[in-house]
Length: 217
Image 1 (cartoon, rainbow, N blue to C red):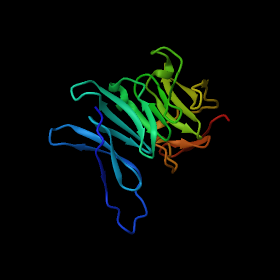
Image 2: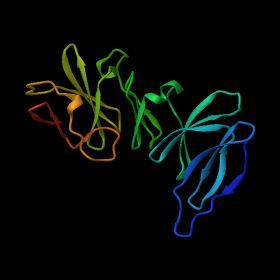
Image 3: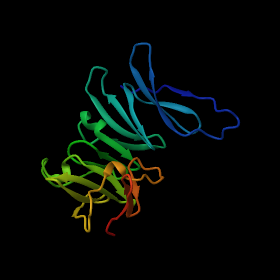
Image 4: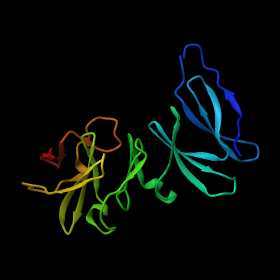
């Protein structure tokens, strides 16, 4: 059943408000419950049995159970928006394969999967499991709405541009390529993204040469 216990945190006078957040609080009986604190410091229990799995920007992944001895379900919530509830749309054992970046969660192992957290949907990336796009490769962001994946296949580098709004994939080629891109030697621009992020132009280097690469518009 649900619990309705509420507590309040005292906010120092010099602090106007606190950012909303979730807390997992373990009770004497050994079961943890999840509380949400609002900007006024008031906490309300939202799940009777559960724990915090990961905090990623404004999103919090919670591991919750309907019953203490029941199966665990992963749910994405936003502390700043109590109405936001999104069951994580992939199996629990794959959640640690995802990198959370802004409003997206992007898998870095196995099949390429992209979750649009804002729109609450899993983008479908076409291709069978053995397709090049789903093989191990290098991921980076090209502008705000595109993901670039570079895969080495049969001794050649292949590039895939993925539209983060629709999931549409465009396969590209490296033109005028005098040497392979050293993906472990890309220069990191500043920015809040969890991935290397470039505005079409990105740089790589070796011991003596700096190379500029330009992505098609």
